[in-house]
Length: 551
Image 1 (cartoon, one colour):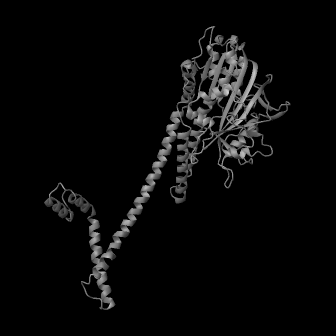
Image 2 (cartoon, one colour):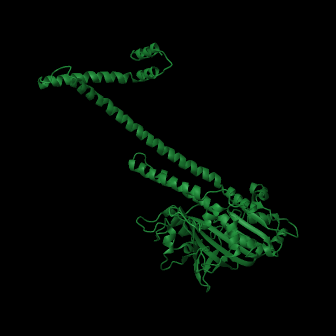
């Protein structure tokens, strides 16, 4: 980073982390059918409380920023986020009102975060604005949402903070035993300043033993503390609410930086800030990397960037895993929490970023469910095939609900909101992932259909065999019942002899007919053809009985 850029100060700093986790099915026999309902019950040590609906009269103040958030989105997105209301005149009782698909819980008790970014650095303290847990109907996905704020941070320190904080576990250790890429130490503080939980990324033995035992990476202790009573699924910790990680340990992040003169930032600073989720602060810029060479066209949205003294000078950097807004700290509109960019960042932009990552997380969960179903399939066991069929049909039903309730490409009629959403979605590869999951479900459905048709065909063949051989007895008994031979008063042995002779003749005729079945089938096709003459039809029937009929 240039020396001049390191002298910049971030007057107002905000960071929002959104960590998607997969919720595991509740234990058998559990009375509660939804994870959020169980969390809402509270209990000793449960610091999560469900937020009240701001749209209910008399519950909470409904301010202009909430109204502007609501009208930003298209109607079907509004129904997804906020639910709907019925007519004042009437409402069909068979069609209940749709409630919001999102259930939000807020955690109390944590007031600040103290960070030591590198060994020997002075600690910095950030205010914890909110810690929330978001649940979604019909989808076993939850988001841990954390919002932090600070003032007057050195620019390079803000970049280092964004890079290092927000990692669920260390990816390795340096020679001193410290976790790579992680903050040296992170501590959650109470309102009184007491340490509630601290990071343990340097505890190499813990992570190695956990991964070896459970074939899954563990979670740093300060993140484990925040999610309680949710517990990591492979662990031995007790808890009915269990979760798994979905993908990368780097949590998706959003940041708001108000800088005195953003126009004076160098291109390298913009690059490092925009690629903060993947580019180490100490790493030299990979000049030939397409992400660097095409940075402005790929990741910068400059609708509100004029690069003039009059402004506006607000720049959006979106790589999918990160969403960063940088603007002029001297411009009142930028850091206004009621009507400015900061208000939009905390409301509209958080929601569009969350929706894009919710799509990706849900699709990855669907894919994981299908992979697990195939892994457990044993085609030699009928009960395994039946279990596989139930799981695929359940997954297909859930995917259908997801498609019609949650999956959409158009988010807002406002061009900049829609453009930012598309940037985020495209960089995450959501469309390709959706098609991939859809094809997986289609392949499994086709397999089940073909398997059902194969079983049906086998059943028809067995019934045909039974019918064919039943005809032998039917013809034999019918022949004798015609009284052509009046042997009703004959001795039993003579009557039985006549019966077996009839059975033998009928069986020989049927066997001969089966041997000639293909030729007879072709002859029947000719006989049924009205366009052919009678002589041609009879000739085809005669050829069918020949030993080696000519074509």
